[in-house]
Length: 240
Length: 240
DNA sequence: CGTAAAATTGAGCTGTCTCAATCAATGTGG
DNA sequence: CCACATTGATTGAGACAGCTCAATTTTACG
Image 1 (cartoon, chains in turn orange, yellow, brown, blue):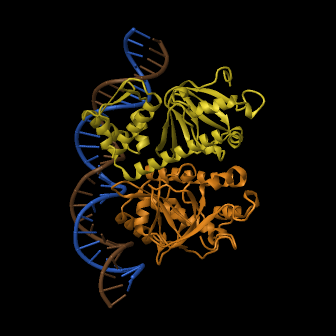
Image 2 (image 1 turned 120 degrees about the horizontal axis):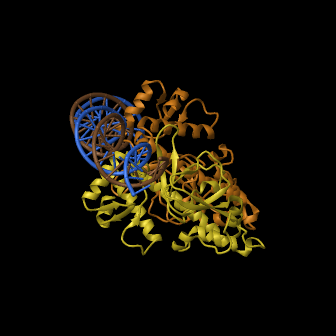
Image 3 (image 1 turned 90 degrees about the horizontal axis):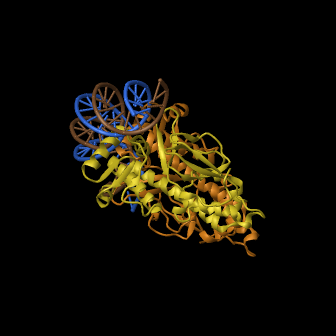
């Protein structure tokens, strides 16, 4: 709600080439959608670590994109544990669902501090029907979300615990590397082992053991909120 | 490609109120999309039971809808078991993925004999940009597919074996009842226990035990390719 | 610096799987 | 229409992947 229009572009998103966030921000300045500048209005909202910023029961009127920091998209079962659907890195849309119906079906929890931007659903849909670029872009983001869900189904349904953990680490590794190509040989890794447990549907205790084994086999190193995959090929082999 | 235009409507779909298939067939006759009748061309293709009609590696140029019979949408892992993503009943779209990219990512296997119709992707997308009805309709089908995937993630990640089986039975029960409101107190149930096993990520042996227990507790009856849930509330309780 | 949160380690347990044998159902050719 | 072949369902015994509980150590944070 603050420093919106002056210089557009979403710091981290820019590093991801043309991240969705940038496309949308650019769109906000596109003359087609209105006579004035910020036709596709949006609000920038900062968040701190370890907070629930959206709850699965609430209805929302905006489509949000992470700009900085890590957040987790999760689903909660009434009295039990929760399942992490995915960890969202800067530039990624928080959930496609609200495009089609107001009820957000996922709970969004922040992991690190950061910020997100919310775009008005109706404006966005209007934009989709005018710009084929934005249409493609948004639907492709939805499609990606679906592909990830399908992969998670395969992980949970068909793969063993070590495979799941290895795949999660590699997935994050690859995604981070893709959006930050140059940064050294380790990546930022703010996840706690409980996050990994919730994402792989294992217990924190068992995750600890597996991570320990990976470490002892010289496959990975985690320290100081950073991850380094020492032997990528071997870990990939292990990930089946 | 045969008896298309004469009398539109897709037998079973009609029973589901305005199933997607009907919407699309109607659309084929809608004058807006062309000067002539069958603007949204489609082909009707029959299939026999127990066949793979699409493989996950192939690329397709059509969006298909089941018209009669049961089929399963599955994902296969190179050397292992397969995971059933969902069982599709008449009137349901086979996969949304191809709307966005040519690669079908799921394998489609028939369970019973039946038929499906394929609509041309490009024509469909064109139709989406012209008709807001079709736009809504299709995206809502995609959204439903995503919702189901999310539910499956919850099932596989967080629920026990009995819960998963109970939920699968109830899900099919509810869906079938909804599209066939009047039909007696049992439903058609062509699934083998291996289908249930592949959908719940359990072994056929264990599924057999659970189904046996459900039966012995007076919850369900399965015989002669038909399912009757005797004590719906109790089974729902069990499904958590 | 003290307190809370996260990670590690070990011991024992259990839900679900594997293997294997048997039985029932379904489909096929003569 | 029947004998056989194939596929699916059931049952039991034993195994193991991953869980629970609990205690301890390490790390993060106000």
